[in-house]
Amino acid sequence: MAYFPMFMDLKDELCVVIGGGMIAYRKITALLEFEAKVTVIASEFCDAILDLENKITAKNKRYEPQDIGDAFLVIAATNDSGLNARVSGDCREFKIPVNVVDIKDECSFIFPAYVKKGAITVGVTSSGKSPIISQKLKNKIDEIIPDYMDELVDYLGSVRKEVQSSFEQEEKRKKVFKQLVELGCLKQGKLTDTDVSEIIRNEKNRAE
Image (cartoon, one colour):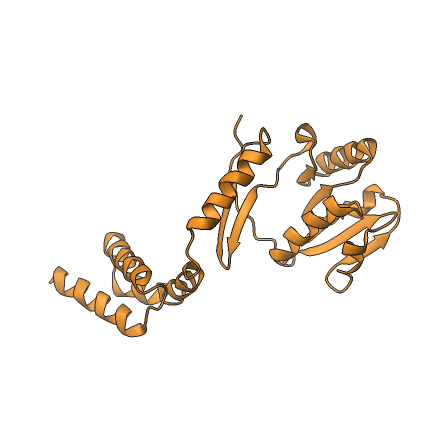
């Protein structure tokens, strides 16, 4: 079975992590990278998590089902398999997406290996069968994405409405964006408004 790739907006969404060790820490830092609102629940916390005190809400307590009542998603990352299973069961009952670290059968979603460069995110998964392969592919992808691509993506996003309003036909819009991407790669992300205006004008002239 393969997992369906779905990208979610976690900005300001409550994500609850159960566990206070280094595995939990790695999941927390991933969630923070995507601007989630993170609450961590554990009987004790490793120093790395304590160092995040200004970025997370840490609750030094035993897990209770009410701790996840308002969660957008939950991650169980304790070294207690029974507790992890209980968290998974509670999440399924409450219809909350849950990831139990390293226990695929108790997850309703899994963490991909991912590359993030600004607005660009590429996720890779082996559907839980071989994390090492996922990591290897992630590293290869990281190598081939140019450093300027994030800048180019941001710029193309800023001119998207201008291009869309210049052409009624979707086909024409795609042609313009394709030319902008090609030119942007040649110029290593340094597109200008003049470049955009010229490409739009040339495409309009072709249509006349």
